[in-house]
Amino acid sequence: MSEKVEKAIQDLVLNGPVSLEELAEKLGKSPKTLAREANPEDRKAKLGAETLIEIMRITGGVEPLRLMAEELEMTLESLD
Image 1 (cartoon, rainbow, N blue to C red):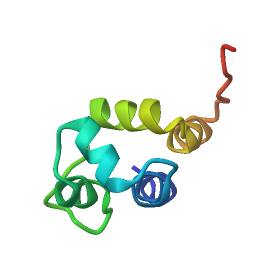
Image 2: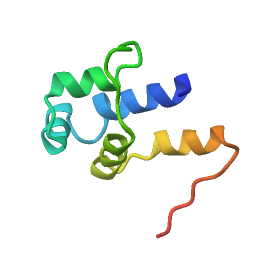
Image 3: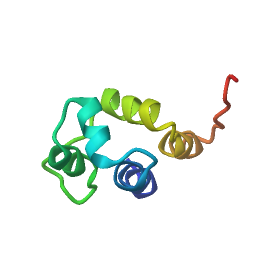
Image 4: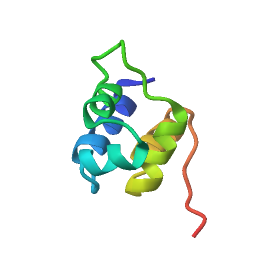
């Protein structure tokens, strides 16, 4: 995954519209575990695709997905 995408995920988890604590609770994880999974420097903890989808669904933040589409030379369009 690109550095831009990794940083966008970390930013969404740590500074997004839903607090780390609330987001972790909704995902059934501890805040420490979620912060580790979102940290691109921590190569021992991985954030799965299903968790990322839930993070974007809960927060409403789709910047990581937009950046992924951009890397694939595609655009992201909302259905609503």
